[in-house]
Length: 260
Image (cartoon, rainbow, N blue to C red; front, top):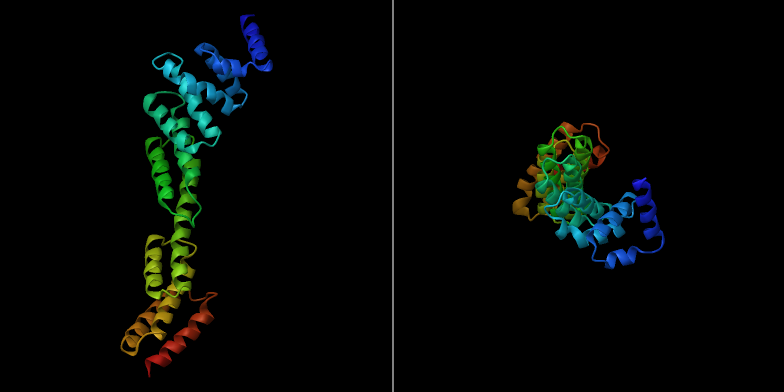
């Protein structure tokens, strides 16, 4: 009976537009109850306005753990990821034995994933996201969130892979062939299983070819030899390739220049 009365009273408070009064009230218990009701309804932004007001007053109290859980999750649900990662990490540190700790720790790590940029942007936040998600995996290896965490790592790794490939290809396009060769060397070393490896090996050869044919005479022969070696490396791994005809034409030109 009391529970029904409580629900009716709470519904009346909310339906009568008393949210603003609760927000301006000094009664922290009302803020907790109304905020919890709003949280349960998925009204996270409104709920968190109330939670933010009462967090300091609930420190050390029995309800603190539940409040901090809802507070952290509200930031995540409203896509306030910079604050979410801090609040989630704070919860995990403060309540390591909580039944909610794995969920919140994962959401904290996932917040970094949401902050990671697309591959064409600076990769600093992508590296941070990988570090945070990997830390979660290492801390909770048996968690129900491990499968999703591994998928996030895979996606972030691919962004780094695309960034590295795109950078090397831009050097090739801009005719900075020495930088392109070095960038493709690093890409092939860092991402040996990449689906882009065939393209990377071809364009590394292409950059080497362009560097050789545009060289001053006293550097040309040495650079031709290096370009031919890179052609051989490409053909070793990709005997049949969409780039084979182009590569063979360039090889023929290199051999002709070598005999001059």
